Structure formats: C-alpha cells, structure tokens
Image (tube, rainbow, N blue to C red; front, side):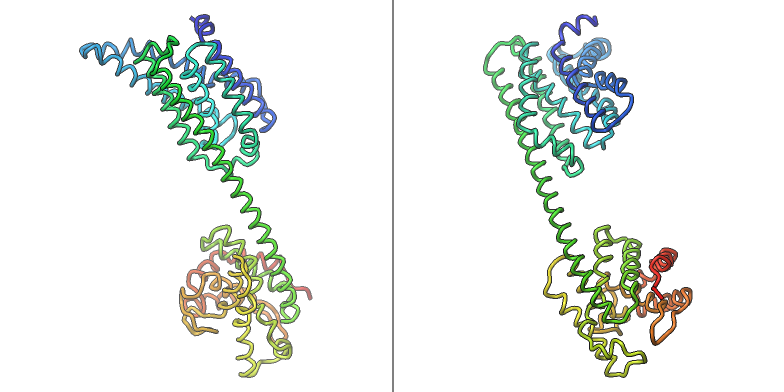
Amino acid sequence: MLLFYVTYYWPRLIFAAYFTFANTVLVKNVFRQKHVALKAIVLFLISCPVVSIVTEALRVSSFETFIAPAISDFPDSYDQGFFLLYYFLCDAVSFIIPTYIYTKIVRDKWMIGSSIYFIYVVIDRYGMVVGVSQITYLIVVIIVLFAFQFLMRDEMMFVIEHAKAIEWRPMLHYLLGLFFLLEALYGSFFVFPEIEKGVINLAAIWVDVIATITTVFFGSFAKINTSSAREQLLKLDYMKKLQDNQYNIILKLTEISEAKSGETGQHVKRVSEYSAVLAAEIGLSSEDTECIRIASMMHDVGKLLIPKEIIEKPGPLTLDETEHMKEHTSYGNELLGKSSGEIISMARLIAYEHHERWDGKGYPRGLKGNAITVYAQIVAVADVYDALTSRRSYKEAWDREVAREEIINQRGKQFSPMVVDAFVRCFDKICAIQDEYVDEE
C-alpha cells in the first residue's frame, strides 16, 4: 500500500520535500531554532501533499465503512453528492491541526502562519486542478513556484523583514476562499470523469481558466497588500522623523523658556514624566502618552514674552504683575499656533489651558469641566504638584504628603476628578520620578 502511494503520488511528495526544505531553512537561518532535523521530519508530515494523501486514504475507507451504508436507501444518484460533501468536509478539517503545528514550528502568530501555510496548500491544489497527470502536476507546480519566486521576490523579502506590517487577515480570508474554490473545481472531476483522464474539452478548459484567473488574482492581491504595507511604513517613518523634528524644536524652546523663567532645571522634565504617567494611568493610547511626554515640556513657553523683572521678582507679585503673568497662557497659544504637527498642536492646547480650573474659575477663558482638553487637565495636576514640592526664591518646598493632600482637596474644584484619582493611584511612581530628577543645589 505504501509503495502504491509513493509510486502514484511521487510528484506531490517532491512538492512536500520542497515545502520541508524551504521551511527548514527558514527555521534554521531566520529563527535560529534548535532540533532542526526533528522539525524537518514534522514539517514533511504536515506538508499539504502528505496531509491530502493521508486524508484521501482515510476519506475513501471511512466513507465506504460509515457513510455509504447509512445512505443505502437513497437513490444511487445521491451517492455522488454525499461523497462530494464528505470530500469537502474532510479536506477542510484535515488542515486545522497541521496549520496549528506549522505556526508553532515557525513561531509565528496564527494569522501569519496560517496564511503562509495556505499559500503552499493553494499551490498544491492548483497543480491538482490544472495538472491532471503526474508529470503535468509537477510541471505546473514548478512553474507556479518559479513565477512566485521571480515575480514576488521583493514582496517575499519585505514579508520576511516586516511581517507585522502586513494585513494578514484579508490575506488569509482570500486564501481560504481560493482554497475552497479550487476544491470545488477539483471536485468537478467526479462529475466529469473525462477531465481527470486528460480529455481536452470545454469543461476541462473552463476549469483550468477559472483556476488560473483566481490564482493570478491572489498574486495581484498579495502585491497590492505588501505595497500598501510599504506605503504605511514610509508614512510611519516620515511621521517619526517629523516627531523627532518637533521634539528638537520643543527641546530648544524649553531650554530658552527654562533659562528665562528662573524655574529649577529639572522642573520641566519632572512635569513631562508626571504627565506621561498620568496619561497612561487614565487609559490614553501609547501614542498620546508619548506625545504628552514631549508636548507638556512647553506648558510655560509663553513666559518667554513676560518681562524679565516680573519673572525673576523674588517676592510676591502685585495685582497688575499677576495679571500680566497670567498672559503667558495666551502668549503660549500665539507662539505655537502658527506651527503644525500633532505634538505642537497638543503643546499649544496645554500651554493655553493648563491654568484653567475644573470649576470654571481659571484663566484665560474660564473653561469648565471637560471643556478643558484632557491633556491640559493632566498637565495642570503635574505642574501644580511639582511647583508645590519644589523650592523657589519666594517659598520653601512642601512635604510630598502635604502636597498630595492639597491635590486631593482640589478634586472637582481646581482639578479633574479623573486625573486626581489617577494621581493618587500612581503616587508611588510620581515620587520615584521626583527622586530620579532632583534639582541641583
């Protein structure tokens, strides 16, 4: 029996050997895995041709043993329909476990591993549909593999290097649809036996044309998918460079603002880190968290336009000086309002609104509640806490616990309840940041 299958299916076993070799090289050279020989044996056993051959043997015997007796009372014409249905069901189920094993061996996510595995399944099925003899099957598979390697070489290299950038879900859905279509076309051999015998007629040509068109469409879809991923990566790279440029601009402006404002050297850095911790704690995205880490450094940039004698005055400010100092929020809005970019836009909102109060008694516009952007709500708490716990020329630093209680007391008054609650939950992290960024004496 084994000799019969080897003799009859030798072209498909050659394809199984190719599958084993290609994926063994992947496992050894790309993933640097151990026990390569054992994994090569497993890869051969789960290759689509081997799985199909075993499934075919079991399918025929199980149908004759279990299904045929159960439908013996039906008309003979029903046998073919039941067998085709059973054929599709067995083939669909037979690849579930091999696909799972394959993803584990190549250490890929299910969606990625399944897609790659089903590319081989589809090639095997296409060869079975178009190449009805042993030799033509082998020729067709070689042509497809050569075309795949030649026409999609760049795409394959891109997939290896940037697998996570590909939209694999639609790829897998397309492959599964193509698989079932090829299955249906192959099932037509049972309806038109002359096709399997190599007779060239309208039915045979129709089956080959449909199989070829749909397979070529998959290749086109795969190229479009990888091209889209390339464009997305280029956009992300551009955005990263833009973000870095914005960061450098902010850093320079922050250094100038810090030097003029007389604030301690680490104040801006602490507010930046506090803000990032609070943003993450209330559930903002990692992108927004990183943006606020940078943008919050600009919260007092408007002080660049406040007279030096007011900024550096050691004692309390007069009423007029206080009103003038308050204008730094509007100045910050004007300074940053003419620049574009996500971080700069966030920095503008923070600079403009970080002195607004939750109860509407803040400045410059008297915004209330969630009319204040969440970024400014966060920085308001971070800025005030650091100001309270930092030594200034006109005051001593507050004890951390006393400052913490003051922040809590202002919950729903000066500060957003959501941000205050987050501040309390991550107070230990706030203290750790304080210990890391200590002011120089």
